[in-house]
Amino acid sequence: MPRTVKILEGLHAVGGSGISSTGDCMVYLIEAFDGYVLIDAGVDAGAIVDNIASIGIRPVSIQALILTHCHIDHVGGAKMFEDLGAEVLAHPLDADAIESGDPVRLALDYYSVLYSSVNVTRKVEDNERLSYHPFEIEVIHTPGHTPGSISLAVEMDGHKVLFGQDIHGPFNDSWDSSIPEWRRSMERLIDMDADILCEGHYGIIRPSENVREFIQGFLGTY
Ligand SMILES: [Zn+2]
Image (cartoon, rainbow, N blue to C red; front, side, top):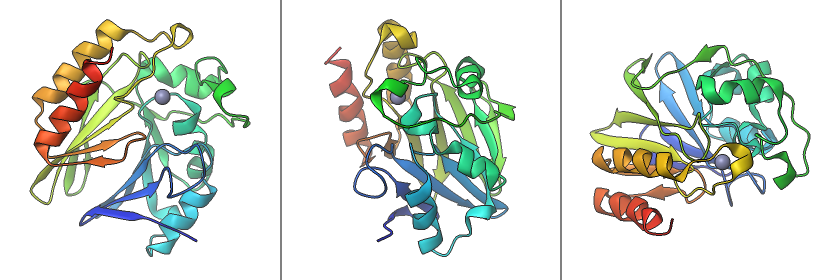
């Protein structure tokens, strides 16, 4: 049975634990006037596509899929959205793995699935602003978990929403993880003082005091 979680007017969780297939990261959908924007694609897009359709949105209306990093639980479903017509965006430092399907950098051994590679048609850099009317989505390069990990921030309905995705790690030398870089990235996210954090596996954290406490909690762990 399809499931989604409405976070704000125009913002939904459409994939993730208890929402779509086991192993999917949290997948978020922003309703822009000129088409929908999807943040990450899960490991298997089938249930996510059903969820999106269940709230009256045609999956072919997704204009952009922003991949926060190259791990299979975030990019495994990308091919289906590419085939439906979405432009695929990612940071250049992770885009090469997404395009080549490098099994080590994709962490394929964590999941027994096949990966169909996609073309990253738009490489996004730190501080870039992506316009999806009426929203401006800010790209924040947050290396650490992987070299090309990005976070995204957007003002919606009077709230500053941060899509931090894999804030919690983990870290692995074979992914070129860097805990010192991750610590700097997390300090930067704390300084953004977001009202709502949409995380990659832990779901939706609010208000701002809880967002700060959540990130600081992981900083205290590593
Ligand atoms: Zn990851």
